[in-house]
Amino acid sequence: MKPIGFLYIMLVMLACVPWIIDSRYIFHIATMITIMAPMALSLGLMLKLGQLSIAQPALMGIGAYTAALLATKLGAPTLAALLCGGVMAALVALVIGPVFLRIKGVYFVLLTYAFGEVVYLTFQEWTTLTGGMSGLYGIPKLSLFGFRLTLAQHYYVLGLMFTLLCYFGIRAIEKSNVGAIITALNEDEMLSRALGSNAIAWRVAAFTLSALIAGISGGIYANYIGFLSPDPFGFRASVDLIVINTIGGTGSILGALLGAILVVPLPELLREAQQYRLLIYGICLVIFLVFVRNGLVSLRWPWGRKS
Amino acid sequence: MTQLLRVEGLSKRFGGLAAVSNVTFSVENGEIFGIIGPNGAGKTTLFNVIAGYYRSSGGKIVFDGTDISNRSSDQIGRLGMARTFQAVHVFKTETVRENLRRAGVIGRLHSPFALFASSTRHRVVDEEEVAEFIGMRGLMDVVAGGLAYGFQKILGIGMAMMASPKLILMDEPAAGLNPSEKKEASLLVRRLHKERGMSILIVEHDMPLVMGICERILVVNQGKQIALGTPAEIRSDATVIDAYLGDSYEFA
Image (cartoon, chains in turn green, red):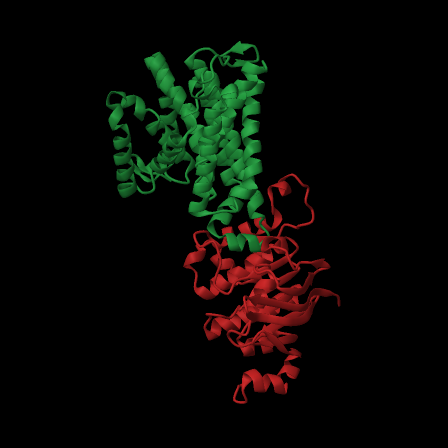
């Protein structure tokens, strides 16, 4: 059997674990994984462009608040509100992308950091709209074609489906001509442009897609938790996403998935040692950077070399 | 013959330094045109202004009826002007086949909008056929970074061909090559012109190579054009001999 096939079977089995243990708490963690995995994939897509974006959680927040506000204040159907959240985040990316993506390296990191802070502060200070730090309550549960998603299990299945859609979608893009064009841009921009590649247009397209994913993840999160505060969309969330991608394997779609599965439950597992959480995070990251530079995907699995 | 590229009174200043001043020439459709000059003469600057890497300080560049004076390199690439690089630019971790295929894909899909447009403007170029033409058919599965330098340069020409351009700009195609590789490269350029009717603009300081393959030559020195004509005319041009070649220079 191909090792990668074996890995998929393992992942499918892992995905079934919550039903075997069947605890609310496990379902909650599993659901959070399926919300953060698309986020990790959305950052992974940016890393494929060679751009480290700190703006992804802010885009997630834009999706979350848009979906929540449309549903609570305007009484929009929840599914429509969720999709609008994704579209809103994508539109924001489409507007800022042409400016931001002209800038590279550490300047891009700083620019997206600043953007993230502006968005975060907006969530925090625009209290009449967002409720500020005290939060936005009473977000209705998602309703899919007449079926109301009330339990963690429901959101887990939804999250799982969205994660699979993102994973296989991005993988299909990666293997297509578009993937070759984007990789080429990252490897040798001068050559790509000489051949006529419209670098900005391709980068903006990828950024917009990554924002769409982040926005929809945010909407699922808002409907699942039923309460929003600016907290989950701050700088810390960006660090988490970077840790996930680094541990999984930077620039690898599978790596982002594996990283999310490993890293998202960490705070829960470390609940007892809350004050050491950052320390343990840091140590994990150092160990990975030193010994497993290319992440989980580069490891030799017991059943053979990963292709 | 129609004019494919027209350069009129082109200047490029860097601060107070006039790297290129008032250069005028044109490349006819189907022509193979050379620009020569000693190191520091402004050849590369001239090349970079034409290819859209520098903005000109004055003058006009018209390519295939379009004013490209202030266009960026990728816009110029989309108009059908491909280029090769003095230093090798290939996708080093990919095979020769993938390099050629990618160049074709990039040449066809310039932007995300091209995915939705039914573009018949760009014909699909067959990488096998191009590989055959550049003599690299047997190296298709070799990783480009592992090829000899000369082959990497030739691959660069193949990649430019994949974008099915109207004009290929070549930035010192012989630089860094040994004598036998130089021969191969100049043979390839000549065949590209003869067999494919490709219009080519070469910037080079290897005099014998340019004299051997170009139909007309522009000589630049210290940013100024000092002569323009056929290789025979250039050979006997007193200004060229005095100002740049020196009387001891051996012509091929």
